[in-house]
Length: 372
Image 1 (cartoon, helix red, strand yellow):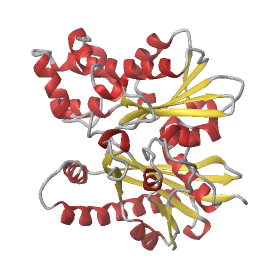
Image 2 (cartoon, rainbow, N blue to C red; image 1 turned 30 degrees about the vertical axis):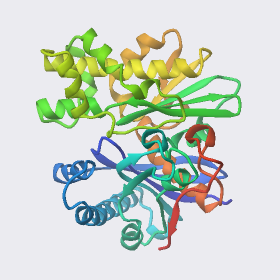
Image 3 (cartoon, one colour; image 1 turned 60 degrees about the vertical axis):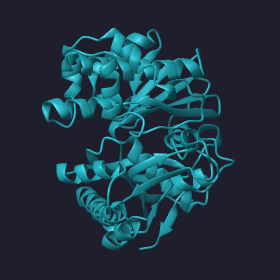
Image 4 (cartoon, one colour; image 1 turned 90 degrees about the vertical axis):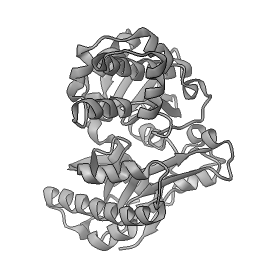
């Protein structure tokens, strides 16, 4: 298992950008070399959004968007390598998460034989355009083995951030939030519920911007207690793990149903309540896995939201709260690095899932290889 240069590509539930990370991979450990964020245009984001919900002519739209995103992921990779002054032939492989357009795991559909998860961004196109072997489709093997297919990040969190005997939790706040509890040599985790997805959708609808910068709009509002209580009744939040979720469960249509139960809430107060909803659901998820947690480190876009971090701090105190920057990995790039790590695991023919997290029947080598 010699040192390899790998690229990790990630486009999450927020659909705002493609994150590309160049890492050194050596014996299961990663070191971030360079990173690049390539924005997703509003027009492309809208195509993804439309395909994420049932509609007409889905197969045609899926095929075209799959190729379009494949080119976008390839362009993000080449931009990253130019930035790093690294030639494509120096990179051993790309690990591409792709863009999730549907996620229906066993815990949601109730039938393991029909459970599925679908990420697009054609890896054939990525390999062809970049000239770099591409590993993709990481989630479906776990689903085939009876697992949720998500979250996969806890396996990387365990490899990168575990430090026994400290009982430590890693909280990834992307569009959806997930938690990882690291105790001794074990790791457990699951999606806790919404991260930024409802906050982003609400501010996009009311102010026409992609996200609430630093949580400024939420910080100006007041939490509406009846609305918060209605949001916290979502059945996913009390479902036992293993479990995973997505925008199929937490979206504007569902939020609108709650606003009909609690009408007349000003938009700014809705934003504040959504921020509190994210913080409370994360706090309750952490409480459910251990009252002995000593440290909590946040990664993902939520780590840059000071209002959300303040709310988490208030709930978690006196537990120490920080970001993964203190552990040597910029919080904005943990997920992209995780998929570079998963590519490395595939190349080394080692498992990439944690059955205790996803509920799969056993450890599996994840992803499929598309040669250069």
